[in-house]
Image (cartoon, rainbow over all chains, first blue to last red; front, side, top):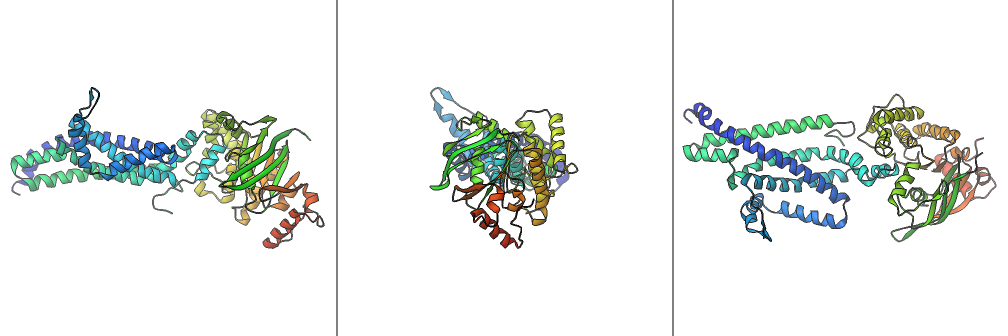
Length: 230
Length: 258
């Protein structure tokens, strides 16, 4: 590892910084999309009509049951071959990744949300309705805020997974952290140094996300919902 | 006393899972009176109360509030009905993520559409009414059972209900906490709140109730004033049930406290 620091400073870090931004552009929208899908689908699975529940169960089964790489290949390579009438959807690598990650993450998130919702005693829903709230009001203002607190550790965990599986975008040609790292390693044959630094970048991202989730947990903490009790 | 009938329950039938829980139950409550439902567990008292506000809709029969029959298939009417019928649950069902004050306030904001200031003021008033003016910012997990139940009473009262349904309000409480809740209920009765209460606190409610309804297997099998039903030589079901309860509790209080 001759001249590691110099090599890192002059080559690795500039390359990875460019990739870092791309990675963040994948992670942030995908995790927001995942959270949105997760909350909607998770709520619908608990309170929705049977047919909708059946449909969402299929969605979750499909996205949890197939490898994410295969899903990405589908969105990027297979989707352009399918057409509805004259309509054909061709996704850019970044869009294919964001949609792929978001849909996959949403499937997992919906499980956490569902678990959170089921942990809230049904009596509170009855009490809310007894006060004249509509079922939607009762779920939105009474059950969801509690379920969200219960689901937060799991949801945070899922975002941490998402940060790491965002590296898969590199195999459909996105120049994210991993993609940039791989190009540099190929060009310089200094695999060891490059991939150690790539690893450190992910470690830093995950650390930031962990701290952020913990901060939100602390912020939302109220008596009766403490992390490691009951 | 005012003789207007506030709540009228006619021929309610309810079947759950093939089992008849309520079998042709009828009664009516006049303004400012307290009706007390007594009977062994499984008699249908809770189900009857939740049929009244359609939390579990009756299979047949009718409910009238203030002389108007409720159309159970109209969602709008049901929402309006529930605003006017307060309900107190055995296990409180406070909203765990809200403080005592917010528990009382949330329906004022969401259902009545009050602005935040007005709703907060009203919530504080109601908390004061149940003796919790000093605890508005505590969460349910920080309150005792008796305090939780008083918050739930305040939450119901804030909606200005025409009638209050109480489903064994003290049954989940430790014995030393029952008194504070009973005091609140007594105050409500004195203020003229119309109430229907399922309870095992027979001697307490005897002093407040205008009528006892003794239920068994989904039917009202006995009804009458506490004085008549609890008379030592009445030979009533109510009397023997009450005697059994007080025997179990180890006190001889199955009498009317004047």
